Length: 208
Ligand SMILES: Cc1cc2nc3c(=O)[nH]c(=O)nc-3n(C[C@H](O)[C@H](O)[C@H](O)COP(=O)(O)O)c2cc1C
Image 1 (spheres, rainbow, N blue to C red):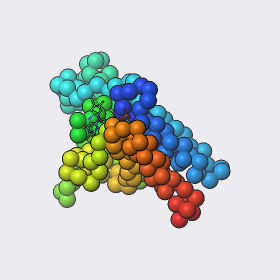
Image 2: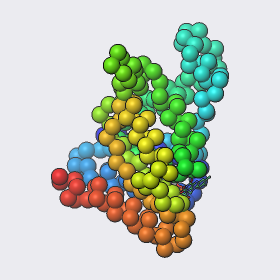
Image 3: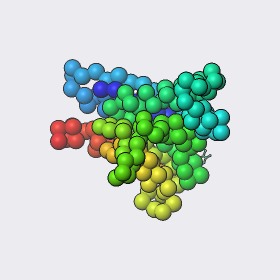
């Protein structure tokens, strides 16, 4: 099994979403049968930001490969590397903080990089078809406030839409909310997130 663990917090230390993503990966690895080894790739978009999809990147992408300048080829290769990681993954575990009611720009840049026509999605006469199929996705969602299942939570509809568009429809959500609402609320939120992880990977869940 190949696991791709993605962090998108800007915080190098003390990130709750990165911590929860790590916890999910550890529980996932522990739930595997004894003879199954997991290959883990960690992509930290906070420490190693991916460049945004600016004009130069668009021009590079829309230039045929054999006509690209060395700089254009190098820019496309950066996206190719992220696409290859996702294509190789059986499971993706994403740490996703809420920033100003959306996803961190670092995560948006990753989404822009992996969303490539005819490679990770395609259009047919029946509409779009995602090409990243057969993958499981876990989202570790951390927020200062509490927005789960409210119209203010634009993250979850957005992520479900774009991941499903790319073919990744099997998505589990783990929430830690209210992290800025005082120490008691923070502890409660982190305990609730651990309980959600336990429900996903506990002995009963694995046996089912
Ligand atoms: C720049 C910034 C913007 C934020 N915007 C929101 C927000 O819109 N809603 C919210 O509930 N929390 C917001 N927060 C709080 C974070 O979601 C919360 O601190 C979360 O734990 C961050 O994830 P991390 O611990 O992985 O860094 C924001 C935090 C930062 C630093």
